Image (tube, rainbow, N blue to C red; front, side, top):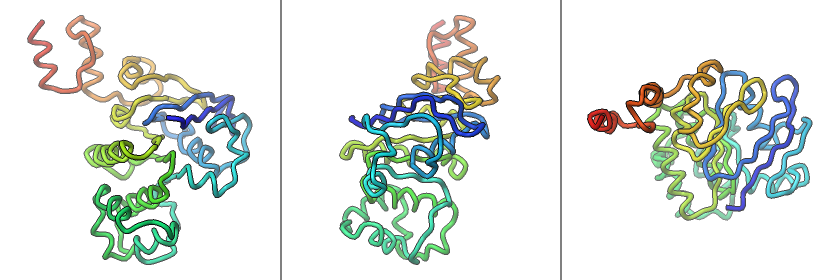
Amino acid sequence: MSNIFTINHLTYGNILKELSMTIDKKIVSISGPNNSGKTTLIRILGKEITEYRGLITWNEKNIEGYRLEEFEDNIQTVIPLENLFFTENIVEEAYLENREISKEWIDYLLEGLKIKKLESKKISSYTEKEVVLSQIFLALIHTPSIILLDSLSNYFNQKEIIGIIDFLKQYQEEHELMIIMTTIHLEDALLTDYLYIINDGQVALEGSPLEVLKNDNIINKIGLDIPFMVDLSVKLMDYDLLDKIVLSKDRMVEELWKK
């Protein structure tokens, strides 16, 4: 994958302070407590906020050097409930945004996101969940290289989040796509390849999600909740009752039985 975001010494007001990270995995999660700068970072990466200090490059080019049209074709941002719709129908909206899109592609995305029924409904009648799914749909019709997803778990339960990510992983099998998602719920991070935890405007922890979540003392001090099975596994590992983190209850019983 050629998609690489490099953030060097990013500073924005009192929110982000000399933040640096290299984002180069297929699915990356960024977590942190409320008001830690997650949404602000998404707005900056999506060029919604342009006044900041530091350097951000995408594929070794300063994002300030991209024409807006070129940038938006490649990088799409989904901040729930912030889309402005210009038509009454989601398919009409899709053709308005991308006149070259095929009906087959529209159907593929609608079915994958499980919102085919919205074709026959007015946007004004959508629930909040349907609006957010429509935002993801409208982002994907551009076949972007990167999609920025902000705090989906504020609108969807864990099963629904898994369904969305599973579809995006399926999408990745045929189309180059980097997913960068923010969340306050660390369960979501377990669905991703790499996790950053930010606190006080800086990166506090980073690495593969399971390795990061072993740092329970630091994470608890930051104010985040460790997923139950991860927390239990870490405590059992402290007593040499487990050798690794186990996410399945049945698998944990098997491992403990071996002891």
